[in-house]
Amino acid sequence: MKKGITKRQKEFLRIIFDYIKDTGFPPTFEEMREDLGVASNQSILDLLNRLKDGKYIQRSESEARSIVILPAGYKALDEPPLVAFLGAASAGALIEAIEITGSWQTLQSFSETEKIEKLNNNVFLLKICGDSMINAGIDDGDVVMVQEQKEFISGDVVLASIGDEVTIKRFISDDNPPYVYLKPENSKYENILFTDETELKGKVFSVLKNGYWKPVR
Image (cartoon, rainbow, N blue to C red):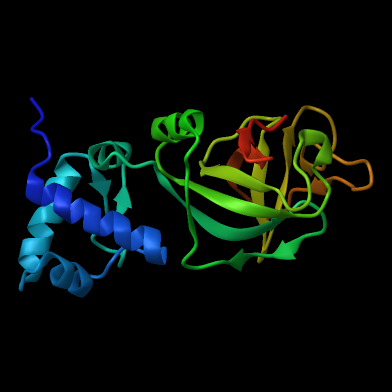
């Protein structure tokens, strides 16, 4: 039987949550030691491992500041999930990817919080620039929610990178030429054919409209 989170673990998890919410990044070991009032990194490692074993967080030992709070962690804190607001993506001409550091949003909508908990936490927000996806219900200035994934089906609205540029388009794969391409949802724009530089980064599954999250069409 899985043991519940201890008072000390919950205190530590709260420190991580508050730091991410305030700064956009997980705290460093030094910051965690200071906030928790301990002197050694081993004490921090022990707590991190217990939270990881309890599936309250996930982390990579090979990457700095790699802590991610999992759905069980948010539930233990009675807090809605934090979702990273990574930057901007084009729904028009291709644009260079823009990273907005230190910017996070708390999902307050119950239905969207529930949806996030069913995902694997590789979720982030992007602001849309352009009008090439208006027929999918995505307008210039909208914010969309993207889940990172590796497998896609024809018809998915995706975040794609082409070299150093990114765009939001509909992924199409069929038996007729041009076979595999990115399709805009606006007749003003042409299809974008796949090249060796094209890579699908994630699926766009929700768009923020008038304060409410709605599925993309």
